[in-house]
Image (cartoon, rainbow, N blue to C red; front, side, top):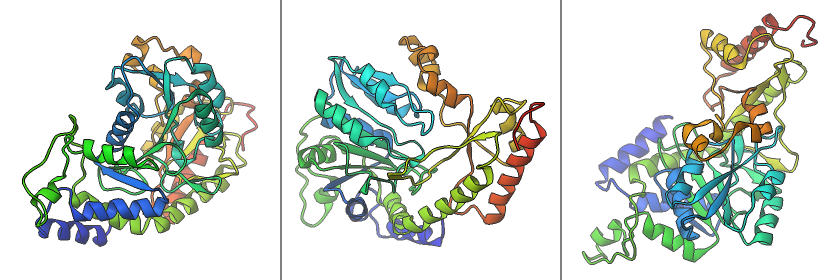
Length: 379
């Protein structure tokens, strides 16, 4: 965040229109053009975006939607809003993205959709997913909370699946503090989602209270309170304008991490497939338990003692109480368990300085060297 965002938010406050209005609509259109989609719908979170996407495809009670085990709970949560069932698939070890083999194993006559999650910003195997969806007449809703800007086989994420949901949460590659966006090529869905984001009314508040509007409106169907504000959209617009620059900085940081940890047997490299571009929302480092005498959690504690805060992405869904109560068992997700036991996410954000990156690298390598198993080949 810089003075540019502060000034944009101040202008939005001072112009007297605080909720969704012209600034939000301009951001919506600018984002659409940046991604290259036909339609974009601005909302107040990625969770709202996923919910409206499922509304658009008319998800119903007892339908099933396939999602990866390694994701934030919102991906599965929104499915339950319809009394439908989240069906958990395993992931790939190398990319942490949803496994094509596991998707195919999970399809039943009740399956309505697949929600692939582009982990850390790396696109999933979208050709294979779209092929499966076409074969079984399923919809594909991309959870791209991590994935702006990301590309798959020279196509922008946001133009591949039936609907794509983006996040502008505080930690994401561009942020408004909170916020989200939906992209789609389907005009009917886009118009319905725009209507549903503001209570299902036929005209938004901007049109009703602007010069060309009237007080009259209709409620087409019960909707939600999912609209953004012009204040948040003003911040997001500035972030969008410098997204390429911020993405370049993330890539620079990542390259330094990759080079630093590449030839150290204490670490297992994260793999990015050659036909796609990730935006590195996260930098996942996997620890090698065969080389280290301490656990992943102990490693994180030692980093924290050095002032380096890390996290784990993610606790697999089947480990949470609600999902356990639905019958999901860790024993059925070998790859997800393998990743969960090893993964830590290192600091990565555009304002991270070279000196701070060096400090992270030095301490990660030092802690590993100090805690090698006897006889380990790690170096």
